[in-house]
Amino acid sequence: MNLAHLLARTARVLPEQPAVALGTRELYSYGELFRRAAKIAGGLRGLMGLQTGDRVALFMTNCPQYLELLYGIWHAGLVAVPINHKLHAREVAFIVDDSAAALLFVADDPGEDERIWREKNSDLRVVPVDAATYRRLTSADPIAIVPRTPDDLAWLFYTSGTTGQPKGVMLSQRNLLAMTLAYFPDVDQVTPSDSILYAAPMSHGAGMYNFAHVLVGARHVIPESGGFDAHEIVLLSQRFRQVSLFAAPTMVRRLVDQVSERSADCSGIKTIVYGGGPMYLEDIRRSLDVLGDRLVQIYGQGESPMTITALSRQHLANRAHPRHRERIASVGVAHSVVEVVVADADDQLLPTGAIGEVLVRGETVMQGYWRNPQATATTLRNGWLHTGDIGSLDADGFLTLKDRSKDVIISGGTNIYPREVEEVLLRHAAVAEVSVVGRPSAEWGEEVVAFVVCQAGVSVPIAELDRLCLDSIARFKRPKDYIFVSALPKNHYGKVLKTALRRHWTQYGEN
Ligand code: AMP
Image 1 (spheres, rainbow, N blue to C red):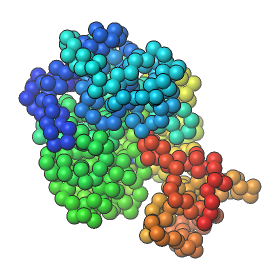
Image 2: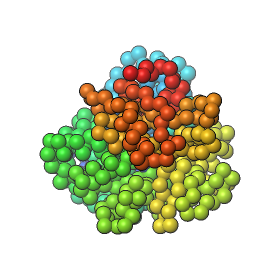
Image 3: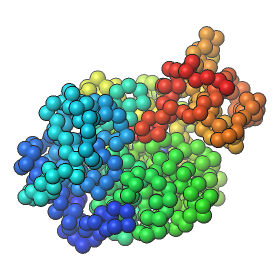
Image 4: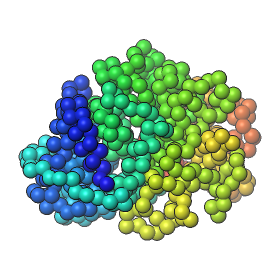
């Protein structure tokens, strides 16, 4: 099996079906997309001399070339290494060196960065997609799909590395096919009249949703901005109708603002799949109110991509359910292709309601970390993927996440889950963002500290935040200290870097 067959099949069955659009401009049909991928595959092997299993990295904003390159790479029996386009040249250098990539496709002339990328990987060839070399590739002689087995590596996915160096998650052909097939029962139905819009980086989860849409023959729309612009998304959804997109919680919030404050018409949006980080209860409620029943949540991680649990449109929409509040605050139920349990430190399964680490096993779980047996052995133990996320399952199988295990605060011997405190503080109208972490304390081991970002132009008295906590959660969970900052440190995926907050106490002045 080779993922390239998904495209080949649709190109045969629906050759005239529109496949790729840049903004509102239709570019290629499925027949054309397949032919381009087959030529690129021929070029990668013939002109570039690449061999089965070689790694090819992509460092580009979302662009039409992304899809044809991914499929060209798989068609040729090679491994794709998509890299987040926001990474620094040194971070890119780490990935191209670690993966020993033979080739790096980039959006435009790399200038000085090329020297940095090639410092440790002098064999690396860099190809801008607007260069003559790329045009030669796309006009090479097409080849037949190179056969691959289900366990062959397809996508080397570099983790966001919120703690230390990124690791290459090895995703096989089978992993990605299982993830794709789970989309239909667990996330959404897709028809050939649908479009998927890439508002989040194609190097990450949004790009992985290409498969389900290729399989059915839906259109792939690349925004001209190459990324997330709420206004552009609304316009494109009005043009194409039945548009689905994957969005991180911050993007959903911006879309909600666009619709509620500018009365934008979101009737062209079919589904917004959100996930990748916690979405707070107040935000979910507001999103449901403003966007209607268009939301589906997924919880996944690179190590089991996009597929640990899902909270369906029906569950989110069923406001009459007696446990609706708990359910929309959960991440839903296990995806159909995996088992999800909560276990203690010895991997013993815990009863309903008990809090422990979330473990996963099944077809989507990675094969391990690339050339890193030690990290693999720590994460894949006793047949389970250890997610590092802490949560509990209810009697109906809904999983509620508490926090990452490394973020749990242990104060006076009791576990405090930062997210619970954050949820409370965010209810204050003047609080824009908040992150709660543990600070070493001689008396308690750790004590709770909240980093708070206020809404523009407003401040908030500490007494009000204290009162909010005292009214809602146990006294010992209340922050001992509030530190007001203008912004929270985040990585390139928008995730708050709690490690940075913990490391740099003194860097942030209290005001
Ligand atoms: P990454 O591998 O970079 O995609 O990060 C995966 C991590 O993001 C997970 O282990 C969770 O901690 C977090 N995450 C992903 N999806 C969700 C979600 N729906 N709700 C809360 N946290 C999430």
